[in-house]
Structures are given as structure tokens and as C-alpha cells.
Image (tube, rainbow, N blue to C red; front, side, top):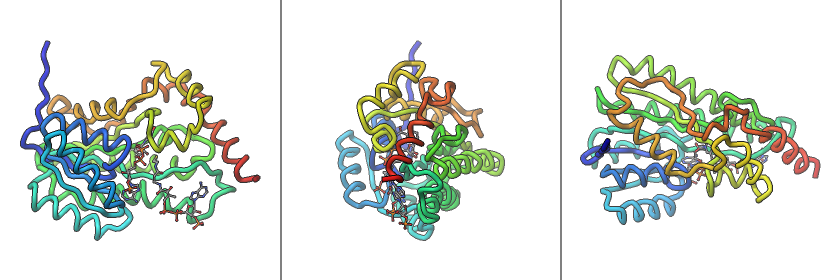
Length: 272
Ligand code: COA
Ligand code: NAP
């Protein structure tokens, strides 16, 4: 059997696409011929990513904006639309995380993660709609297992990502009539990323994480990129409103002992 996925002449926009998983997603689309736009806060990271996507042969551009700033996101997406036309695929994955218990975090700490992950997703969804190919566009939100698994020291992320998945489902209803599909991908533990560095900061914990994944390995950004490729392509033309774990089965077992580990890590830090 042969399978060709060709994104030539298609525009893919990846918000938060300048490091880790989302940059890996942008690279996978670039290798399949897409035109790519990326965005994040740091102009240096944007420029570095644009250069690496160009080196892969992609037509590419980027803009710097904070997803908490609706006007900045609207302005950036307008420049992408002007240069590249309608969007075939939008991936929204900007996020923040740190381990802290509710007793150990300020209201502003909780708010900052909710504002980036949840309100930021709302801003990106709202600002992109008029530029989406209708019918035919695919929107993919990058979620996390915390969306459906309560975890100690992750109340901010659990609350925000649960909201992200509910925006996904609600927009699958609201935008379905326009022919726009909206899905979430839930990455498992992805090796070498900022997220894993923050949650599994040493070799011992990394080993325990690997042992708790049914497939006995961490994932790669490319694993998530390939799932995005599928959800972005016509192969998934009747899939909408789905929250898809791409995690080697990790969430089936409650993500091992990540919850109690993060709780004790945070409490140790908070008690000095
Ligand atoms: N424990 C408890 N509180 C923390 C914290 C920690 N480890 N790290 C930050 N905070 C608090 C800050 O003290 C501040 O609260 P305060 O004003 O009451 O002191 C609040 O969170 C906001 O921090 P600040 O650094 O001002 O926010 P920011 O907007 O510059 O950055 C973060 C947002 C905190 C989420 C930052 O970690 C970030 O930019 N993350 C992006 C990268 C990332 O997290 N990648 C992994 C994705 S899964
Ligand atoms: P990462 O490298 O820190 O990526 C986060 C991206 O978002 C960066 O490009 C960052 O760039 C951008 N960003 C952060 N805050 C932003 C803001 N306020 N406005 C605009 N852009 C912002 O993290 P990662 O670990 O690869 O995680 C990527 C996604 O996967 C996140 O949604 C995360 O929740 C999810 N996830 C990760 C894992 C994992 O194992 N790593 C597991 C499950 C889910 P700037 O710093 O330039 O803004």
C-alpha cells in the first residue's frame, strides 16, 4: 500500500510553533510541502524557526505576538492572510506550565496559565475564523492529559486544558456547518521538550515516566506532527470534535505516578 500526503499549495499556521512539539509539527508539514507561518512571543525564536523551515524548502513567514493579546494575534494573522491567502490548517499550541500546588501559587500564577492556554486559545480561534478555508479547513488544538486527568500541582493546567478541549468540542458544533473540522491532540510525554524538562527534570523521573508508558518510550515531536498531518489532511475528512491522545497509551494508566510525584516536588519547593 502506498500513501502520499501532499500539502503543496496549502497554508498551515502554527501558533506557539517556535519550539518543542509545535515546532516539530511545523517541520513535519514543511517536509510535506506546506507553506508555513509560525508565531510566538520571542522574535528571536520566530526568526530562528523561519530560517530552519526555509532550510527544509518551505515558503515560510512568522510574527511575534503574545496569545494573551487579541489585537496582536489579529494583526499577525492578518499579515499571514495577506501574504499566504486562506488557511487550510491551523494548529494552536501556545502554553505555559510549572509545578505548583494551589496553596503554593498566587492568583496571578493561576491566571497566567489560564490566560495563555485557555483565553489564548479562544483568541486564536476567534481571530482565525475569517481566514479559514470554508469548507475544508482543519483546526487542531494542542491539549494535554491534564485536561481529563486530575494531577497534583497542575490545577492551573488541568483547568485551562479542560477548557481547551471544551472549546474544541463547542467549535466543532458551531463551525461544522461551515465545513470546518476542529479537533484536539493530547500529546503524551514528549522527549527533549520544555514541558518534560519542567515535569520530569532528572534521569530517575524520566525512567519512571518511560516505564509508565505502555509503549515503553517517550514520544517525539514528529509523532505529534504525524497525527497533525492526519487530522489536517483529507484522510480524516469525517473526524471532528475529537480529543485524540497521541501518547503511547500513557493516559490509560493515569500517566503513572506523575500526579503524586509532581505534588511532592512542588511541596518540597514550596516548604523550602
Ligand atoms: N511556581 C509558582 N508560581 C510561579 C512559578 C512557579 N514555578 N513560575 C511562575 N510563577 C508565577 C509568578 O510568580 C507570577 O505570579 P506573581 O505575579 O504573583 O509573582 C505568575 O506565575 C506569572 O509569572 P511571570 O513570569 O510574570 O509570567 P510570564 O507571563 O512571563 O510567563 C509562565 C508565563 C509563568 C507560564 C512562564 O513559565 C512561561 O512563559 N512559560 C512558557 C514555556 C512553558 O511553560 N513551556 C511548557 C509548556 S507545557
Ligand atoms: P514549549 O517548547 O515551551 O512550546 C511552547 C510554545 O508556545 C513556544 O513556541 C513558546 O514560544 C510559545 N508560547 C508560550 N507562551 C506564549 C504566549 N503567551 N504567546 C504566544 N506564544 C507563546 O513547550 P512544549 O513542551 O513543546 O509544549 C507544546 C505544547 O504541547 C503545549 O501546548 C503543551 O501544553 C503541550 N504538551 C506538551 C507535552 C510535553 O511532553 N512537552 C505533553 C502534553 C502536552 P515563546 O516563548 O517565544 O512565546
